[in-house]
Image 1: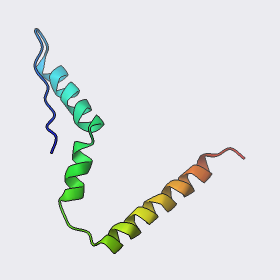
Image 2 (image 1 turned 135 degrees about the vertical axis):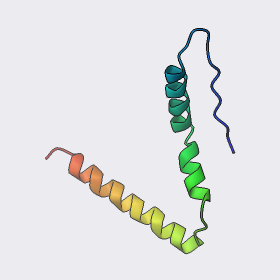
Image 3 (image 1 turned 90 degrees about the vertical axis):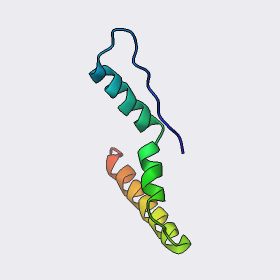
Image 4 (image 1 turned 30 degrees about the vertical axis):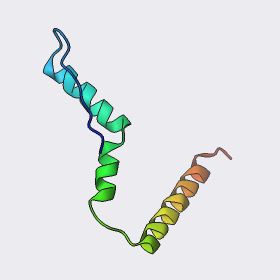
Length: 67
């Protein structure tokens, strides 16, 4: 598992360092990875979830397109 690390820079506030840390965690998809490994999905269930997400993205794409 990846570890996001942020070093406090000279004169930097804790709030800024925390903001950088949150951004780094978000870009490295650490949260998504942890949620994915927090429980087991059977291969068939995983496939159904993947297909449902694809259908959702397709519907969203159709809605966004101008007529």
